[in-house]
Amino acid sequence: MNDLQLHAVMVPFPVQGNINPLMNLAHLLSSRGVFITFVNTEWSHNRMSTAAAAAESSACTSKFKFLVIPDGLPPDHGRFSKLPEYLSALEKLGPILEHHLLCSLTDGTPPITCIISVNFMSCTYEVANKLGVPRVIFWTFCAASSIAQCNANLLLSHRHIPVKVEDLKRADKEITCLPEFQNKGEYVLVNTFDEVDAPETVSALSINGCPALAVGPVFIPNFLEGKNLNGLVSLSEQDDGCLKWLDAQEPGSVIYVSFGSLAVKSNEQLEELAVGLEKSQHPFLWVLRMDIVGGKPGTLPEGFVERTKDRGLIVKWAPQVKVLSHTSVGGFVTHSGWNSRLESMSMGVPMLGWPYFVDQFLNSRFCNDVWMIGMDLKGVDADENLVVGREEIEKGLRRLMEGSEGEELRKRGRELKEAAFKAVAEGGFSFLNLNRFMHDIAQLSKTASRKMA
Image (tube, rainbow, N blue to C red; front, side, top):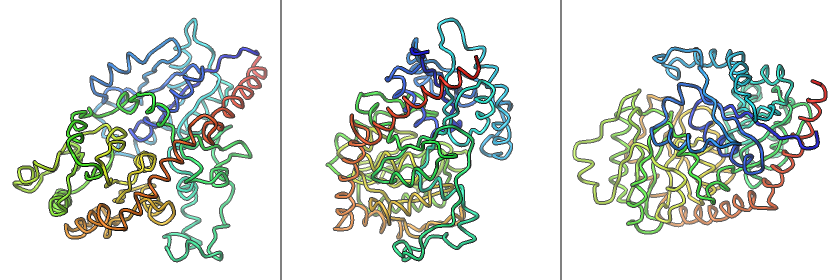
C-alpha cells in the first residue's frame, strides 16, 4: 500500500461555471501524478463544440480519461427551464454513476481512491460510501458566499441580510449565529485564496472537523502553462478572433461585457445596454450569447452595430481568461459569477457588477465594499423585469473607466493579481494546501482500503 496510486473521480454540476474550475483542479492533480476520471453528462457532452470535443479526445491520456453518463432525462427536456425536475434527476444519479464507474475500471486503471464533486452533486456521497472511498467537496463559490447561502434563512431571521454597508465594520453587527456547517464528506476544497477569503472563513466550511482548505485560483497554473482548459470543456464555441481585435486597441481602453452562460436579459434591457455602451464612447468587446433572451438571440437598436463598428466588437462567446489578461482590457461588466470575479481579480481588472441570481449579489457587494476591486451598477435588482436605464449604464461605465475612482480600483487590482499568483506559486498558501490535500487524501484512501480488505 506504500505505492498507492491515487485515482480521483471528478464530478461537476453540469454547467459551465462548475465544469471549468473542476477541470482546472483535475489537471493540477494530474500534474501531481493523480489518475483522473472526469465525468460529464451526455447533455453537457453533446453541447460541447466540435473543437472542444476534439480537444477532449486529445486530452485523454493513460492518466486522464473522460466518462460520459446519462442524466436520466430525455434529450429535449428543458433542464434549466425546468430546474426542479433537473435537480431531482441529478440527485438520483448515484446508481447510474456507480454502474458506469465500475464498468470503466478496466485493466491498468488503478482503483478509485476518492470522489471529488462540487457541493451541488450530493448523489456522489452515496457512491463514495458504497465504494468505500472518501468524498471531497469542492466549493466553486467563494467561502463567504458559500457560508451565507447555506444559512440564508437564519441570516434573514437575525436581520444580517440584506447587508447594510454602514454595518460592515460595526462590532455589534458581527455574525455569531451560524451553526457548524453540515454537508456529507471527508474533505473540503475551496476555489479561493487567502487575500480574499481568510483561512478562518474557509475553515467555517469544515465538516465535523475535517480540513477545509483554499486551493485557488485553480486556473492560474494551467493558464501560465498555456493550457486553455476552459476552452476544452466550453459548452459554446469560442471566438478567438476577438484577441486580434484587442491587439489593435489602446492599453486599458476596452470595456469587456459578459454575463456568463446562464443569465438572461430582456430585449428592452439589451437595447438600454447597447445605447449606454455607445454613449460611453469607450471601445467595447461584448459577449452576446445566442440564447440570452429566453433561449433566443437579442435584438439590438437599429444602426447600433454600424455606428459602433470602429470601436466595438460583438461575439457569441469569448476565451475569457485570455481576454481579461489582455493589456487593452480596462474594465469588466460582469454578472458577478464567482469564476468571472476570480478570473478578473487574478488579472487585476476592475469590475462593474450586474448580478443576476444565486451568489452573484453577494459577490458583487464584496467586490465593492470588502475587496475594493469593483463597483455596483446602480438600479440592478433581483427583479428580472426591472430595466436599468441607459443613463445609469453610461454613468457606471464612465465611473469604471475614467477618473480617480477607476484608477483606485486598478491599483487595488494590481495588488490582488500579485496575491493570486503568489498563492498558487511554489511555496504559496494555495500551493501548500494542495500538497497537504494530496498527503491527507492518500492517508484517508489507505485507511479506507484497509477497512474494505
